[in-house]
Image 1 (cartoon, rainbow, N blue to C red):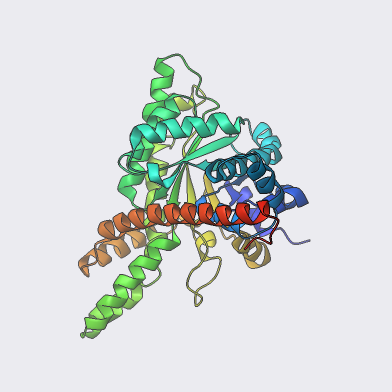
Image 2: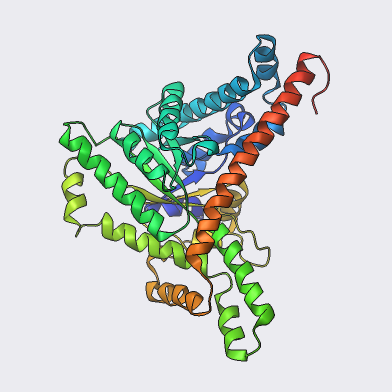
Amino acid sequence: MATNPLRALAARGQSVWQDNITRGQLKAGGLAKLVDEDGLTGVTTNPSIFQKAIGGSSDYDEAITRMAREGKSVATIVDTLIVEDVRSGADVLRPVWEQTSGRDGFVSIEVGADMARNTQGTIAEAHRLWNAVQRPNVMVKIPGTVEGVPAIKQCLIDGLNINVTLLFSIDHYEAVAQAFLEALEERVKRGLPIDQLASVASFFVSRVDTIVDKAIDEKLKVATDAPTREQLNRLVGTIAVANAKLAYARFEELFGPSNARYQNLAAKGGQAQRPLWASTSMKNPHRRDVLYVEELIGPRTVNTMPPATIDAFRDHGEVRGDTARENLDGARREIQSLAELGIDLDALTAQLEVDGIKQFADAFDTLLAEATAKAEALHAGATPR
């Protein structure tokens, strides 16, 4: 019998998480099946996921109707539904968390995008969500913005598991990794345990290619000499993987055997803050649909995939080795070539952060609007839109 490619990733030290959660999947045992058959070890969520789950199905109608009749606000209803799903998912994954001694088996819940520029608000909301879910294997997602970094550090010091989201640049990844190490050191200084404190740094992939390829296309419209056009065409679809590989190389430096600072923490039970590859579905229909999985395999990493990518990788994914470590010199050359051609990757990744915050804020606003319409229709006994 052929080896399940998803399980082959685990053999390379990479965890497979699902970037999705729905009440229907939870009730039907779909999440448990993924854990049992594919070795799934985690779940990530965001406002877009819940907007599709709650707004796009009837799975939540009974709960919405009940809470609407109790006079609860739509914001409270939505918050309750999200917390319930995350708690249920955490219960399914609790055995994984126990079997891995708190190293895996997490479900993430996200601080609202409206807090992305508010340090103190983020800290307060992260604690509220942590206390609402009340599961040791929950991770609170906090954007790795300039304002988010001190909130991330404080929440880790306070003992919350943190999934740092919306990372696009190596500089921002570096700041987040340093905040994690500082938080562990502060807990040690206070005599607090660090062996059960977990964190991942969610480094986004496909969105980088989307915005860079668009910039390359704009350059191609005005480039006239053949060498420049050839160089531009050669970079299409390469920068996202190159960017992620260089982030992984930095991770291995910061959390590797030669780093005395981390090894001192590891001796006290401290975990590494694993890189998590996010946004790994292929947006370009002309490219291999599992490329962002196949090219970023490495020890102590996580790849969170939407259901379609999980299915595709199970069907035809190839695991050829620790690909995240391959051809780092080539990755550096590709990033350098981009700069030489006048494309500012730092500016593009900064724009991606802004766009990501807006996308999640818009998704939550849409979710509230759809939930309002559904609650009103259900309460009135009509068919919800």
